[in-house]
Image (cartoon, rainbow, N blue to C red):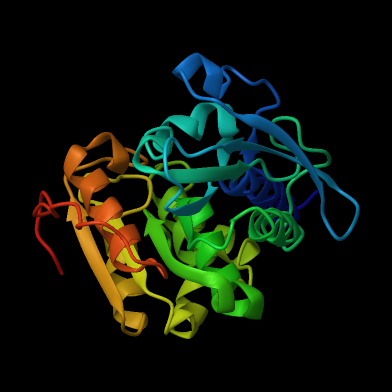
Length: 295
């Protein structure tokens, strides 16, 4: 075998392995539920849905405590399942917001395996369910990481979402699949030389930056941590620049998926929910200055 042919075979093998690794970056599901909301002292309901293609999708519904102010539809990140992400929204029911969070296909108790664009059918199914259980109160979408990027694209391209959402909160979203895969490949010396070929293999046409302007006039809150090494803050800046008003970007000192561990970030989200509710609310929560400034 010639050196040229052997080199070509090795390159194809490396790119195939890299493509598989990038798929793991996009979706890295875990079927085991490590806790239920009950372990966090929360009432909850197990919900099973069926997406338009027949896939069975599992979710948790967390009722609001006291008077219902609104609903939050939560889309988690690319790894594990709702049992490891529920703590990011477990604090909302005590403030009067019911929360519905789903596992994409292949995650937790949901059927199948995660792929694009089929995952958007799961997002659609969960949103439709929540519409029927919102009790005529405002509905907000809250996404983190992969869930934030999915939420941006879903809202911008789904007329029903744009019509019914009172606002969308996006935490640590990436701007495009090409850029996030390139970033991950570039962060390892072994895959650094292949960052652009790898990104090209995963260059899906569902990029948030291409459609984020279409979210308007739905209010948009973007949060991103300055210490986020998984999705660099520059992704949030690019998305913010591409979005149209009404929009706001809050930078915190948090790392990836750590935003709502900070009290300031929780208060800022509560203020956003209250400000953009479609019904009369009580006095706004005091918004606190973000840890690293307001853009």
